[in-house]
Amino acid sequence: MSTPVRVIGFLVALAAAFGIALGVGNAVGPFETNDEPAAHDAGHAEDHDSDESSATPAADVPGGLMISQDGFTFDLQQTRAAPGQDVPVAFTITGPDGAAVAAYDVEHDKQLHLIAVRRDFTGFQHVHPALASDGTWRIDLDLTPGAWRLFADFKATGAEALTLGADLEVSGDNQPAAPAVEARTASVDGYEVTLDGELAPGTDAELTVTVSKDGRPVTDLQPYLDAYGHLVALREGDLAYLHVHPDGTPGDGATEAGPDVVFYATVPSTGGYRLYLDFKHRGVVRTAAFAMGTAGTTPAANDEPTEAPADDGHVDH
Image (cartoon, rainbow, N blue to C red; front, side, top):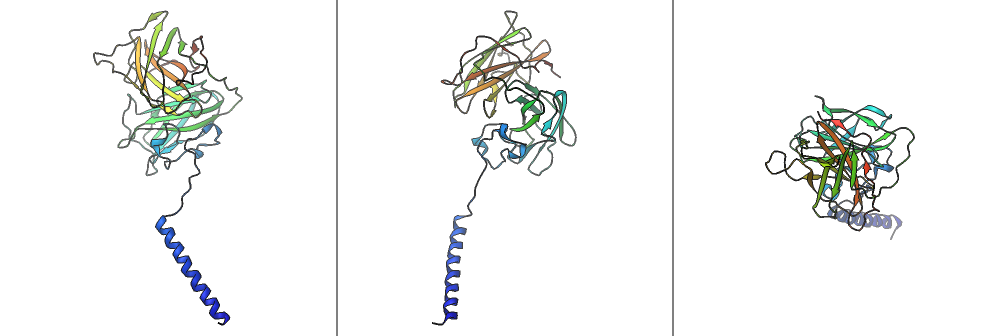
């Protein structure tokens, strides 16, 4: 056989083999890779672009770990800020069409809840920004140097409720706080608040907070966000944001206005958790902070009551 004939035969065979391989590839489908971790520790991120996108299965990830989910994105106008009181912060929630969302349903008495937490848990604020007609939310925050995590808890009209998280780096020198020990009693402005109950992964745990002042039980708590208290739970490490539901509703004829307020919380894993209770009394909202672990992982007990976060205590508007 001549050389040209052998070359032609080789090319025909090669083409046939390639066609078979291509057919197998189309039948199986393209190979996909996902380099994103299932849960992002934003403390190692330089900016919010490294957070999870909506490609991560939402059912497998607790709230607040992703910056984007179900087509919605928490878009901070700036991811770095100077420290100080009344630091302006602005952001939008963009929808699946890429435009800023302007229509929200009221959840827990507000259209959107913004939680700002310093990653060493020495700062905490629960505030309610103002919404402009162009879909921009604005609020002033009291920020100390360090890494902060911001959570936007909202329900866009026609969509499911979401909690998205984004990082805010505040410039300046800071010393991270020491690891927490268990703290189930908090002292704030003369009030003593205790937390009772046990957390267990996958279980709807009953938690009871009891409020007293000057040694006397407080029985005239005022409604705050459609309840006699609002409780936020965060997992240590990645700051996963957990929804906690109050038991009862003010004015329902059965729910008492203190001293006990009951909540139900389900944690996704073993480990340590920080909890923050906002309660309203005599027209002022105060915050009590706690630290506790799941069964078998509870830190060493702390007999001293914890002090409230430095930025607690505000009049509710």
